[in-house]
Length: 131
Image: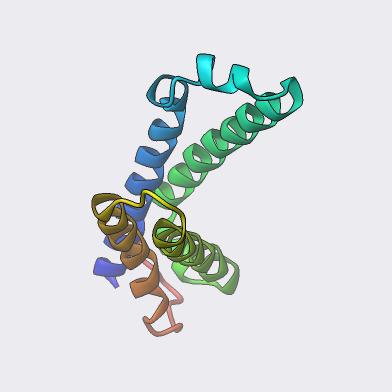
């Protein structure tokens, strides 16, 4: 059980790092210049989606870091963990579908998926899950 709690917490750290990465998108991708090439609506949509993802990843990082045992001890929590397994596995598939994929980033996504997939295979009888 303790290793599964560790994996969930490491998944929380991954989500925190992804949130920080999204905060950096404006400078990393030179969005001041690049988004000005889009219509105002499309530029706004890109930025709003990114802001939504920042909030999402920071909030979920907090939940994963603070309540890993509770997430593992009930079906709703396991569904939450499964959502992240699906998210990171889907993003991994996209890394190879879209041009200019990165093996380094694909490795990062594989590790992230591992932290969420493995705990889903533990037994469900966890009435007193460790936190």
